[in-house]
Image (tube, rainbow, N blue to C red; front, side, top):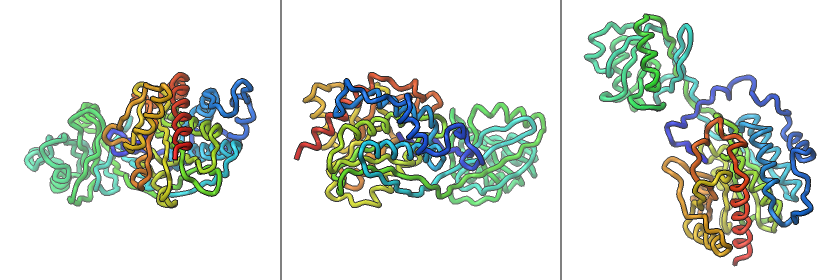
Length: 424
């Protein structure tokens, strides 16, 4: 699930620009990963007790192990995401689909800002509008950053540290520069990181923000009279990603979808290897003319994959999209999205005795790929298992997914596909 608008999930992706990756231990060719896995005991052998037409939760869990375990972190634009795409493509081809990789680019925001000193460093976020610049100087605590705060101290040639509040960020920066400071550090007045903006104010000194928890360290550094290096380095770059599209027949009249990228912080088992693993199994057991499958890239950075897809393909006549996002750990099973389709899906589930689902909505600043289709006029919903405090966290590993939840969501998806595809 994308929480791309929420300040706490500001993208910090320094490793995207490094020359190597923690994923190098995994075989470099994603196709080889997929083919080896399918052929090995890691992937369950065909279960003769389970008819081919019946979705098998063990297969879902096996796909999930490859995606979140063997491949691991799948940040958009990285080798991990590309290997996952190749694995998905190989699996869909094995299920009888015609598969196309559809490349697109997205605007990747990065922030490599930092505060460095002799024996360590602090994380920082550039204030929007700050120049990409680096400055060196002795830190001075300067209150709220008002003109009178600076007039009481010698800040010329120094790094000023001010508290958030009272004075707008842009004015704090202008006041600091006017007093001769070489850099500005703003300390948050509440827990967590923040990204402020200088607004229309233009300055030439680097301006960054830090968490409230770092204030004591900065006070100690100011009292010690050491030297800080303040680097503001934030921006964006066009970055490649891809959607994986599996077609059965010449025309797609309905879609199954899920995103396969993860956040940088962890392997994204529930969010969203669970959804991808589920649509791979549903695709295997529901191969019908007109029902196509899309694995979306770059969802975590702002629904880029689904937005690219609806721009690249005509949406007129598409009957529905069933999207699966966080389906591996039920806390509050929901169908989220376009109301009419929401009602239809819930009706189908209730008719089949699946009463544990409700019509829901994502919290503020969160969304999923169904929203791109709804905006394009296509009825679309997301199957969602409810809030999970471990998503966007290193602990969202394969251990964070529950087999019982997979069974429930898989059966629900199967029922919805069958009911919607046969209804006219």
